[in-house]
Length: 285
Image 1 (cartoon, rainbow, N blue to C red):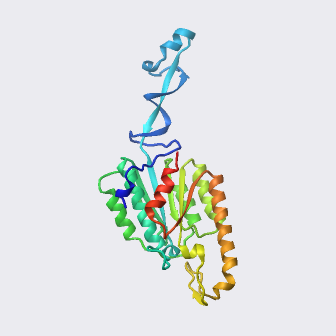
Image 2 (image 1 turned 120 degrees about the vertical axis):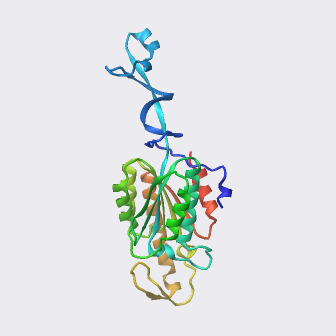
Image 3 (image 1 turned 60 degrees about the vertical axis):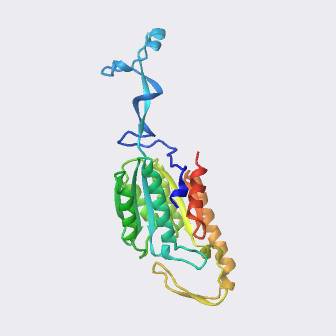
């Protein structure tokens, strides 16, 4: 799977801050090779950066400023709540296993570019976090952390997003991998908080094909996840209402992401993870 991603790259569209020199534009101004703008000279400025051509024409002293280049910091937030453990027959992976694959693939792309990656798992063990790093062995450490995490408990992904927004001190690319099964208002409030802080946010909403298509025919007991209890129901009698509620939920999520300029992709877990990644990354300018 990782080999098939060759040629793809992850780039930040917005300005990101960083501490190391890299190949991504910084929100800060510096004196690198690429010109950005002029500003008036003030006492104490380095005279090496005076634009003498402008001085010769106007008798005014201006400094040439350029855009500094910094590394990308990518924060992977992976939902590890109980609902992520769901898997129907058509899907070869559970939502959690699928999320693990995507997280490792993103980490591979980021680390391959020499940038730093961090991991937060949002579940009953919230928040297990790996500090941002690009050191050797980081990918294996991330894989080990995901393997040691188990889906359990009633978790609000919206609250976890708010918590994450309060913890991030550096503008970053935040990749959210979750089924987003929470109150829409909570989810969008968390995404809005991240967007307001000028993080670049990408959301991959993972849903099992059975959750989207509701293919059940016979009367069955549906097991509630995240402390919701069980329900005996006749699927044919509730299918239309269920599908309408699901579509309404997805429309609100899509509209909210669009309003906050958040990249959004709905991913079915019977779809190849490679295809999901290519759909997201190749459509980004």
